[in-house]
Image (cartoon, rainbow, N blue to C red; front, side, top):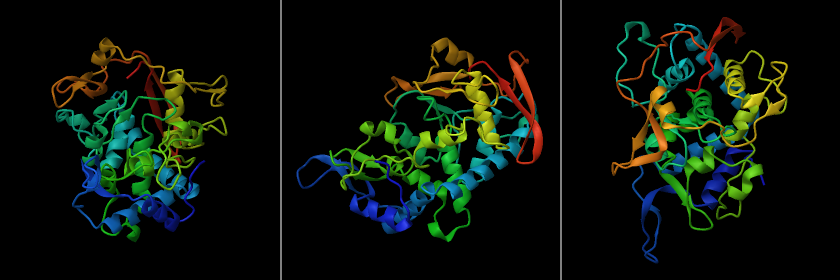
Length: 354
């Protein structure tokens, strides 16, 4: 059953009932089993939980979230439309410029880009997750975004857009006290509770990575008997359904992010649009992309290493020192003269993977 918080109090009550607190994995004193134990929090725990309750309520309230997401799309469009035509990864560069203005770090894997004509154009995302990876904790604690390539329905950028909308909505708000949204994003890795089956459920899962009701069988059950399931913007699939017009079968009119993702998904065969922009088939299977090592290398990605030095099969990172910030030619290049957020510009695509 979908859990929708109709008020901040309802969200705060859920956090209290389910015993969320700042902690770490450790040895429990009662029965000497490993579990979630208290650690010294960098901020008052009650304040942290109050902040997460405000964010949860916001994500459960469609109109404010959609308004904030449209503002993020507008800001990204301003950056995107003013970049040189052959700049690579313009979408994530634009996203990164919005993100750093909100206190996020965005990426850490590329050497500094010293090209004069690219100064001020930001950096593309430096990490790509292609399977389940505990590295997500590192990404969160360091305020980094990542490209999520595990599942089309989940979306490559759904969490990035989700948190930029949160940051947009709460910018200057007294609801979060002295904490920033980027601070709270980082702490979602270390505020947690134990589920009914004693598995650790981190704030990240509860707040921003819920399953949709269609996948409720995969969700953990909390101590209050409710599963981490929500057909709201706490669920990344719900964000993608909204942006890709799952109910209207067309992208949002005048909305840069929605239309960019529509074209990206159509170019890759992840949706079918016989009479653009009307969508006739939404992709419902697993991510159709194949990840072969020769493709990774040609696209500027390399396999990542675990702390032990072993290859991490769940994650890729951009190859330091070899990434080219601009395209050498216009092969497989297409562009569209468009107008988003009442401002003209061009959307440009390379239809090859990458």
